[in-house]
Length: 78
Image (cartoon, rainbow, N blue to C red; front, side):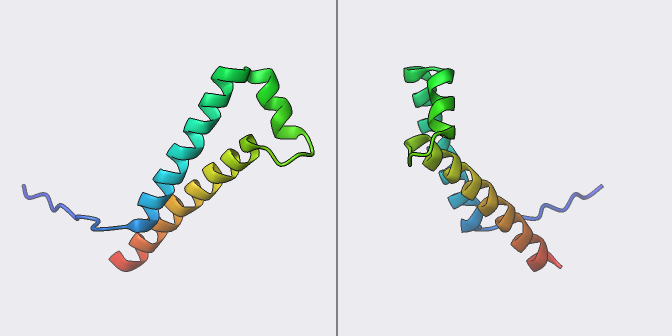
């Protein structure tokens, strides 16, 4: 039984996506530990431009980049 191993190679979309997710996650966890869930929730829904909103945007962008990296790899694989 032979198993073929397909190496993905260098995919910078996925790497950047993981980096953004880690950075955004660290900031959100830090804010939760310092302020607590009630204050962080208030910071997310108020009208001001806050660090928590930037962190959520970073998580969203990171997930988008990861999805883009997997999609590009599947197109190249065909």
